[in-house]
Amino acid sequence: NRFGILGQFGPERKLQLQTYNVSSLIGWDGRVTPNASIELEVYVSNESHALATFEYTKDNNKLGLTFVVPPPAGGWRAHTWQPLVLPIRDRHYSFPRLTPWDNMDRLELYYAHPHQQQQRGDYVRIRNVYLRSSTQAPSSETARYT
Image 1 (cartoon, rainbow, N blue to C red):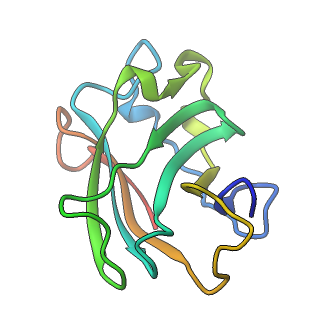
Image 2 (cartoon, rainbow, N blue to C red):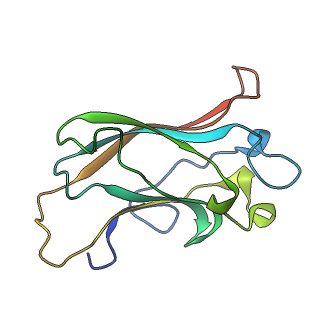
């Protein structure tokens, strides 16, 4: 569409996300504990129609994390699962102290350079999505979204 929305998942959408309590990964300041990242695998059907923005927020554009997704090393490759690690920086947060980390259930994905003439058969898939902090014990370090 003209906004570049690839998919919306959440309580007011047909595609639902399971609600996750990720508060065990959150520090006193409302941010994920140090050395945190979002990790995921991305599959694109067309290199020019790739994932550009990953928004894990409670409300549209606020209360959570938003990333501009860089292309993988070597660029996007069609019909290949490509692993990405997105380090979480201060600039990715929107109102972290107000974010209900114990009740997160919304994800929105965008592609870059939306255009009305984009081929309708192009698609992006994601899988094995993790919110990870390397400072916690292995049994509680990861919240997984699939």
